[in-house]
Length: 213
Image 1 (cartoon, rainbow, N blue to C red):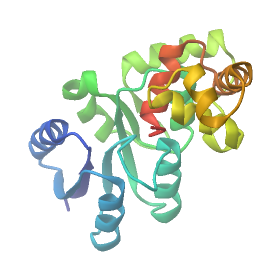
Image 2: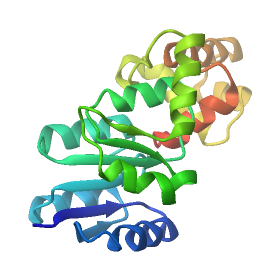
Image 3: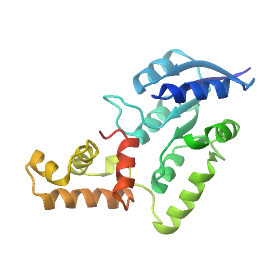
């Protein structure tokens, strides 16, 4: 029996590329596609599926955390094999995703070579793109601690990250929330420390990957 496969990505070009790549595998049968989280869960509720190949973060009004998406999938479909395809490059975030029992974590930059390898992996020995493996080794050496999940930030820290991700400056956020610039800066720095992020670029990528905009 072929492996019934669902593919998900909010970028049509990436979706087309994954479809073309996986359709050439005789062991797979693509039984559905989705471009957002709502469409994904609707599809999985009505279509039996063995393997899900999904982006980590997609725009959705109710789903704002890529890690939470995988957690929900694990709870609702515990037997489903999951391969995550993403552009993330934060070592702590990579480690947190791997702890959720996925079958593979594939860089979109190495989709052609790495996705077929992830399809053949297992949750007990998940595939990790070489670039991610290097980042994970480096991150463990430098930080030595896993990424805290979004729920472990304070509500005010999450609020500041959302506004920062929308393009507002610290000063503009302070005016918007009627707080001092020092308070906003402290909350931003505290959130970054908890998340294991040491640069504004890494923070912005985390915000984008987790839909905090």
